[in-house]
Length: 577
Image (tube, rainbow, N blue to C red):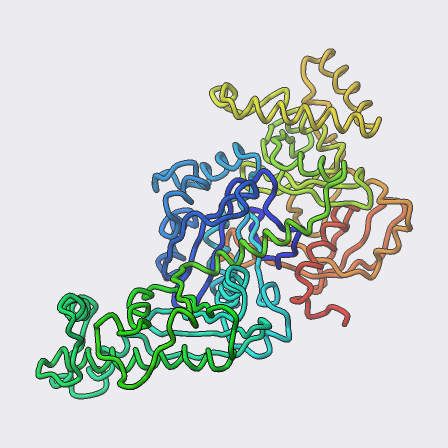
């Protein structure tokens, strides 16, 4: 299981890309396809650097392995970031894990703009073998409820409107130019004026062919339409609405109709916003901005004759700007603004950030000294720093939750054994990881004498036996059972805090399990339940799931379960209102 097993709602500034995260993805799911962008990290102000568009997943994509399917959707730069090479043949789960291990921020942050559950399910499948955290932005992240009440738009369109408002101020008009043309306006107070939609040129050039006698009205493809318009521009003679050529008859009428409608939209928008001190900005974006911009000139770029006796607003009243991929810039603005509002880190938070990305070595089973390596992907906060726990993503794909003492042991073991491959141990990145780990361990020892004492114990074991493997391995009797198979070994129970452990009784929790459906092998299912009692002798909490299954939780699992429930409580049908 990867950290991208579910899509959770993004909460800023908590879910900003990590300070050491060099790249992250933004995915905008629109009805007609997926818009992707690869962004730089905080050092470059979260700027998008590469854009591309793909269709949605098809059945053949869902039937292949996740990594193989993912290669069909990623550009070369994204492939190199996730798999370590732009070669499609190297896009494997093993290479994704190995590449993640070398990065200071192992998990790739992926922000999703979508309101379609099937699209989100498809993305979960694509990234199911990639160390990642997948976060969802919603409409309310870009505009408040009052603004949203007066507009009907996709989340991607709202993100684009957020971007142009930040870049050009208000009033502003956005026109998305594609097969259809959608437009949205903001007045001088950044209030939505509504919007509309009309047919783009591809639809207009086919409509007579599709709905009338196609022998009389030909269908005009892009190549033929381009030849007609280029001929008109070069000759300086606009296409006439009176023509004997069957293709020009259709093209001229369709173009004149579209030009008149576009120009009327602009004039009406200017009328709605009223007089302004500076020219009003109209932003054109989408796949067909070139033709739209040509038609929104004083003489329609000589493509077609303009309406007689109708004055078109000049540059003193309106400024046209061509921009593309505005939703990605909307996310950039959102992240940058949140970064500015983020409270400076205290010493504990700095140490938490230093933990993310470290490599650690872990022994899973009592009596078995097989060593597993992994990367720390997340820190789960406790009431105080010493009660924090960390999520260790093993190279095999499993997540393990560790308390800080167990983490200290795992960092020490990695210092001793390094990577499994002797060749890798000679690579620079391994030494850098071990140096970073040493720095963190020193900080832990300074912070609490428990870690300093643990260092002494491990050093004595190393001197006596030549290794700390037996010292950090789970004891033979550490086999506390559970009614369900656990996702990861649990650390020994520890005291949660000075407050009564009974305070968690009655709280709802959530936990991920492997899907019970054999056809969904590898998928995870979210189960909800309630904490119904606490056992003072074992220091464990009893959990009953909504399907009547049962399990016992230690403090770390209680904390993780409550945190996961809080992120997904809207899906909990039995949550108390």
